[in-house]
Image (tube, one colour):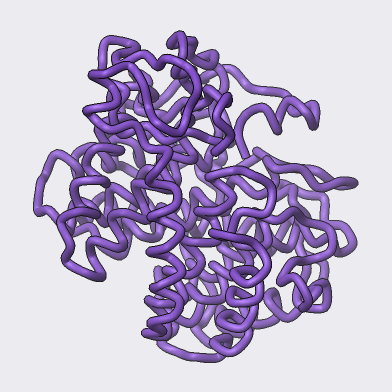
Length: 397
């Protein structure tokens, strides 16, 4: 969902804090417990227990979970597929594939509610399942979702013409001094004007993954176009990704509207794109965004523990954002050859792991507040923790 969802839930948007220099890849010594102290066996056991704790909330008839929303459910399946991928196992294969097929059969193009980001969360989960299990049906679902959303991507020709066939209003070809080509509309309705970072970041990421999987330059070119939109339209001077541009009049969301998942999806897509193209501009860009993402004071304290999306009593969209950042950082870690950057990411991920284990854990369940206190089980708190548990399996090998 977009920033509008955060407004609906009364989330306070924090102002941009002071950032360390974007190129500084040193690990801040003020971070809380930035090294691993668990054996691989314990890391595996904790991840399995964390997944087991959320599964009783599954409604198998629609592949969703009691207590969290549709897009968030896709991220549960993404996590299970990625857990198998990074561990080199097939433990969750039957559950992941069956439930992704259930959702596909129920909702055309994985879109239950009329949001292109929702469709792509599920399309991305299908891609992760393909990557983990070499399942051609999952790849087909990911490709079909990509094809559907591509109708809502502003092409260079659309930007030049000032119109796109799927919308009933004139669009601005240039905003903020850069082309609008590559931006993706948040909703498929013909009157929605929002072009936002998360929908475009999801498209960048899915395009890059499909390029990596197939070698088809169509996906590569799409990823490049959307990467340039993010760079030109929603990347602030501190290398954090902003939220939304209105295609009809170039109105841009306030500079204070900053969320983890916008930067997280951007760096995930850029990490894959850099590998696919061999173009260092993309690795340079993700390096700057990563450094800014882990060292800002917008969504974490000076101790490095993420504070965004802490909600003890009710689910909201923002609760699910921070896990997307960690997943994106993990993809950078896996693909980068920059040892300083990898050390920074590894340390940051360990900060989050140690925090949830020591400040937010009750048995094998976790509060959505990673600074504590611990509390009884909530589906949304468990969702937020799953990527913390899964990334640790790989980064601490």
